[in-house]
Image 1 (cartoon, rainbow, N blue to C red):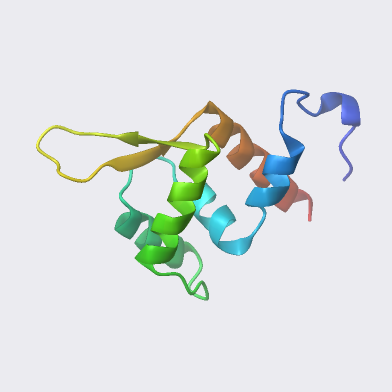
Image 2: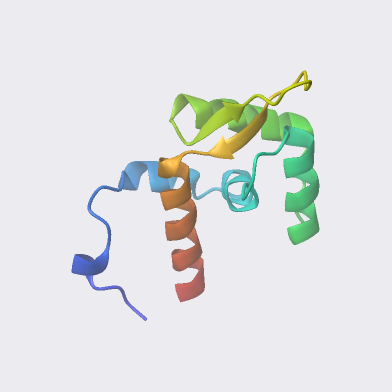
Amino acid sequence: MRHNPSTLPTSVDWNLLGWVCYRHRAAILKTLSEPLQPSAIKRRARARDPTLRMSANNVRDVIRLFKQRGIVQPVYLRKKKHPRYELTDVGKTLRQLLGQAESVV
């Protein structure tokens, strides 16, 4: 199934989508459906794909890169010392496009 180029969003940074298409980055992007800490992201990502070899430090590194590129933002909750992270609108668009790309393959 091929997508008609006119049906694809025009406001997408295609270079950013290509940058996200690496195993750990894509797994983290797909896992972030709600605000989570890096350790919870790791647990959920590994539950979705038991062959994924990823540590919480790997997640923290990727989250830092995602923050620099505007894909995630920190969420501070009352009485919680460490922030959780959620997808920005850009991140949600990338997650949707990544899911569409995987469903085609």
